[in-house]
Length: 57
Image (cartoon, rainbow, N blue to C red):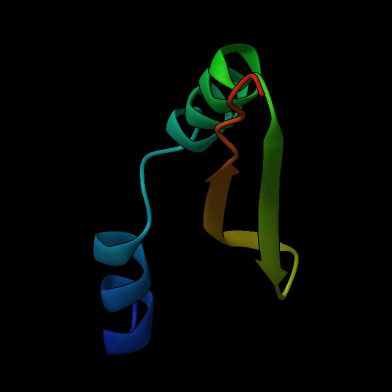
């Protein structure tokens, strides 16, 4: 049995496997920067990619 909050969480979060694919793609394609993973109650709720662009002097 699912509750309303379970349904809302399922709709808001990507299917299993998708977030890991996204994280892997971010890490492989970023030259300078960071990937931050936010976890709540043991589940990934958000992923931020902060990419730096560096210019030659």
